[in-house]
Amino acid sequence: GLQNFASRLKVEVGGIGIGIEGASEPEPGLADSGDIQFDLPDLFETLGMAARSAPKAWLLLRAGSRTRSKTEIDEAVDFIGARLSTSATGAFASSLTKHSATALSLLAEVVLTPSFPESELEKLRAQNLSGLKALVTDPGGISGNLRGRLVHGASHAYGEVETEATVKAITREDLQMYHAGFFRPGIAYLVVVGDITPAAAVAAAKLHFAAW
Image (cartoon, rainbow, N blue to C red; front, side):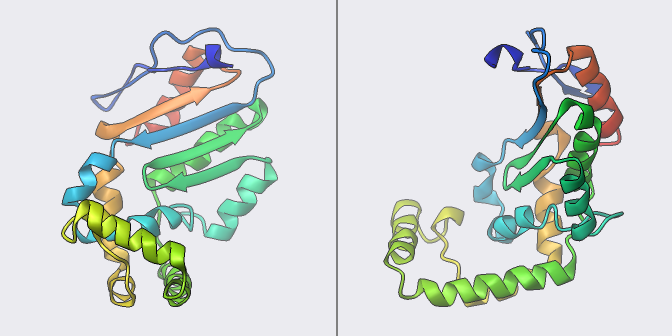
C-alpha cells in the first residue's frame, strides 16, 4: 500500500543526491517495483528536433543495449515474469521480490546504455509512415493535430504536426541527442516500492546506478 511508498531516497552517487525520506517499513510479500522519472515536460520547448524524436526515443529505449539485443532483453524480462516499460519521461520495472535485483539491473541497462539500433528505428519509421496514411481520414487524428496547433502554436513542440517529411528526417543521432540531453541523473528520481528496506534500496541504487 501507500505506507510502503519511498518518497525520497537520499543517496549520494557520484556527487549527485538521489533520495528517499520518510520511508516506512515494508509489507512482507509485496512485489518490488522500481520507477525512474525525469523532469522533462517543461524542457520540451527548447528541444527542437530532439523533441520531435522523443516518441521514437522512448520506444527504442528497450530496443537494445550496448550488450544485448531487443530479443535478449525481452527474453530476460519474460524469464523472471517481470514488467519493463519505458516512456518519454522515464522507465518502470516490476517483479517478484526474489527477482528484484535482476529487474533493477534490466531497468538500469535500458536507461543508461540504450543502443538505438538503426534496424529498429527503420521498423518504427515504417510503422509511423503507415499510421500517417491512415491519419489522413481519421477524424480523431485530424482534430488532435488541429487542437495542438491552435492551443500551442506552430512554433511550439506540442503544436508541431508529424508529417512524412518529419518522420523521414529523424536520425539515430537525434535519438542519442534526446537521451543524452534529458536522461540525466541531475533531473532524475529513482523510486522503489515493495518488500524492501530503505537500506537495501540504497544498496541497490548504488550498485546499479553508481556509474551514472
